[in-house]
Image 1 (cartoon, rainbow, N blue to C red):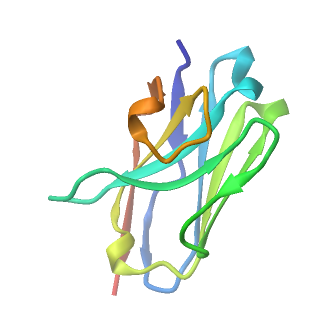
Image 2 (cartoon, one colour):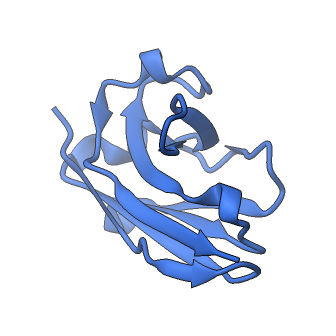
Length: 118
């Protein structure tokens, strides 16, 4: 089981930037795809980004960029030009395949709150 701990959430004004971090406990971190998801109040969980073990990425929203440092067991989510609708709890997750399907991820962090004010 991989333990994941997110950090970096904060309250920012619209147009600002944040970088979230997620540190994994497992030595096998470099073998896992790492996804970022979010859940806004009253809404379903939403896929944000994913990165493969080798660094290939998929981010539907060009304001967001995912990266990883396998030497540090850490994955990052850089978020730019933030909007109030980006307000949510952001979660990282580890899984065996690169996919936006949350059901394919086997470990999840506890989440970090991002609040964007207008």
